Structure formats: structure tokens, C-alpha cells
Amino acid sequence: MTRRTPAYFVCLAALGCGLGACSNDDGDDADLKTDAIIDTKAYVTGELEKLVTASEAIQKAAPAPDDDGWNPREDAQALEKMRSAWADARDAYERVEGSIAILFEGLDISTDERYDGFIEADGDDDLFDGEGVTGMHAIERILWAGDHPEHVLAFESALPNYKEAEFPSNEDEADGFKNELAQRLVDDTKEMLQSFKPVALDASTAYFGVIGSMEEQIEKVENAATAQDESRYAQRTLADMRANLEGGEKVYAAFSEWVKADAGEDVDTKIMAGFRAIARAYEANKGEAIPAVPDGFDVDDPSDADLDTPYGKLFHLLETEADTDSKSSLASLMRQAADDMELEEE
Image (cartoon, rainbow, N blue to C red):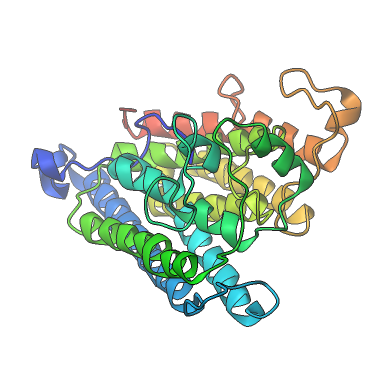
């Protein structure tokens, strides 16, 4: 989970602000705004439904509790199903992460906080209950116990309140995983979906949510340099970023006709080119993990040699596209379009 500014989707329903009530626009712009909001709402709702389904699949696939818990040898089939469902949940969440973070701050924490964030103040000696360390990364940490990369173990084991990850070793722990920890994820994601359905989205914050999502890509890469990236146990953070980019493109597509009308087709073309450039960079790195970080990589002053590595090239591209001082960057072009559409960042 990443801490955000309110540049993401904002719930205005509590203020009595629906689609019609919020708009002072006339004619074509009003229609384009309404279309953008309707399409965005439908997309986010669909991904939240997928998130719930995948969370339920994790819980359902968890082995029935028995005296010796479960392990990756005797429960290999169940473990594979849980890992696959976890990846599905992760993709759905990343596609709409911005809406979750600002609308449901408490649920965002319980669902997506990293292990180091949870134990910063207090430890959690029970890895399997539905309290303390919870959510997708708590489940990920258990599902990939024994397979954590060495640099991740080195980072986490030095943290105060650290507890080594492990599979359930007895009936109580297996029961806790299935009926408390996994059930908590199901309950939280269902609450997100049901709470989102009546929300009236605001055009400005929905659009700026895409910008924030794109600017966040560089933060995800930077975190990998210190083993603090999110899906670090499964080594799947690059897959997270692909899903996050896909979600950003989908939401931007809802605004594309409005951008063309007010900012011009050239601006829309350049923005789409920026999305494609990032997508090509992601696809150039095979697999689901962020490329290996060169030893001693300095995110503030990387060497030319480090920038010439797969990780360095990815880092440089994302830093460039998030640079608001560059008029040609994706972030700047999207902000330019926002100005032309008279959208104001909250």
C-alpha cells in the first residue's frame, strides 16, 4: 500500500453531490463528463467484483484444518490454487487501487498494508488470525513461506517486532488461516464492493487519480531498491505495476473523447503514446518480478552503468514520465489536458 494525496477517486455522495448536481457544464462537455464518470464507475465496480471472487477462492482453496496444519508437499495442489487466486486478487486490486485508498482508508490498510507497516508500532505473534497483520500481503507472506528472497529476509529480519513467516503447523493455525485471516479478506473486499456501489464519483478526482497512479509507478520501483516493494514474497511487483498501468489506461480511456474535444487530438495521441511506452518497458522485462537491483543503486544519483541495467532503464523511464517539470512527460501532458478541461486537483 502507498500513502496518497487526495488525487484519487473521492466519494462525494455524502455531500449530496451526484452526477447532475456536480456539473455546471452545458452541451457537449457535460455529456462527455457524464460518459467518463459512468464508464469509470462501471470499470471500478467490475474489478471490485473480481477482487471479491478471487478473495473467496483463496479462502475456499485453503486446506481443511487438521492436526499437522498444511505444508507445500502434501498440500501442493491447494497451495497452487491459493497462489493463483491470490494473483487474481492482486491484479484486480491494483487496477483500481486509487479508488480503494481514498474511499476506504481503513479497509485499504487492512487489505493492502505491507508487513513492515503493520509491525512498525506493535508486533503480531499470531500470523493466522484476522487481527494485527492482515490482508493480501499477510496471506502472500504465508503462501510463499520458505521461498522469500534473501534480500527480503535480510530487510525484514532486521525490523523490530519481526516474526518469521511459516505455514500453519497445527489445526488451530490452519483453522485461523482459513476461517479468520482469509475470511477477513473476503469480508473486507465485500464491504468495499457494497460501499462503492452507491458512490457518486467526481470527474476531477477520478481523472487526477489516473495521474497519481502513473506517478506512483516510480515509487514502486524505488521501493524495490530497499526490498520494500509490495508483492516481494511472491516476487510479483512488476505484475502489480502492469495491472496498475492497465487500470490507469482503462480509466483514461473513459476521458479520452473529452480530452480530444478540449485539449486536442494531438495531446490525446501523446498521452496514449506515454502509456504504450511504459507498457513496452514492462513487457521487455519478462516475468513478474522487478528486475534485479544493482548493488549500491542510488535512486537519487544513479551511475550511468547502473542506469544501463534492466532495472536502471525501467527506473529512468518511469522517472522521466513522472517528471512534472518536463512538458513532454506523461504526467505533464495529462495535467495539461486537465487544465484544458477545467478540471482542478483537490
